Amino acid sequence: MRRTLVSLALLSACYSPDYTTKPCVDNSGCPSGYFCSTAKLCTVGGSTASVDMAPDPRPTRVEVEVRPTGSFYMGTSATDGINDMPTHLVTNPMPYFLDEREVTVAEYRSCVMAQVCTAPVMGAYGNETPKWVCTYGVSGQDQHPVTCVTKDQADKFCKWMDRRLPTELEWEYAALGLAGSTNQRLVFPGTLGGNACWSMNGSCPVASFVKTYLGQIVSADKPGFYDLLGNAWEKTSSPFCTYPAESCPTETKLSVRGGSGWDTDLKFSKATARLGNTASEYYPNQGFRCARNSTP
Image (cartoon, rainbow, N blue to C red; front, side, top):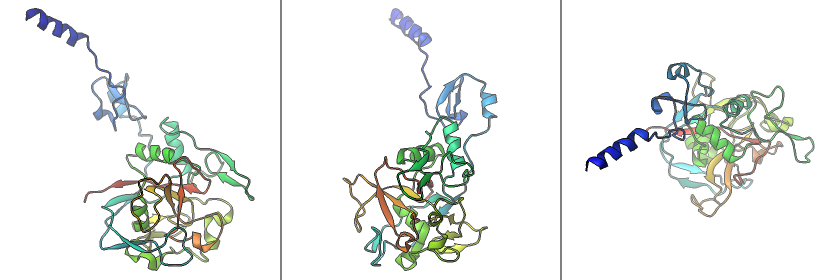
């Protein structure tokens, strides 16, 4: 019995657990002698005090809480729909937060510099005339939405921000609220199509258009969202189901929302318009914003 106790004591003295794969948010989530790296993993070395004083590399992003009420109708009964027919009643999402703006090139670059995200594809895309150009790496476009990102790249950025991609239902509710299909088109200043960024052969800086909240225009000092229409299309985490189905386990495409489009065709400029892409697809007119759960 004594020999067994001595052996256990020796094993305990020699064993040193490796915490370098332990995920963390800040230094408080790591044991003594470790600090939380920018990759959000516990890392050996350095002074805990000095690391705690280091600035957080993550950008500050404004988010807006949405607390759905009443019944919500998704889709449209219009005949010029884009994968958004018919109108159908759905279960409201639980309360959530959604980013006020699309993720910008500068914000995404901070994630790349922190060695959490990978740089998206850069340069011209395809053979279109005029050329489609991915926004990352383009001079003067730091405040434009980052485009040409895959779903995995968008997921990594949102996770780094302690958030996630929104669901399709969350996105449409934020855009329309209880207005449903009676308010399919969010209002732009002047002519809708002529003011969509992509009609100008490229993206615009984020917050180029009016701010809206649940289908209504609000002043800049009120909670709301910019560019739910008119700038880049936005990736969601939801499968691209054929309406009115809310579940489609075998579907490999994911829903993309935002109704901006490359041209000025009004059918692409509706809050109900939707496209489907695989997780690995990326385009110069598609970006994203993040969301997170709120308390019920």
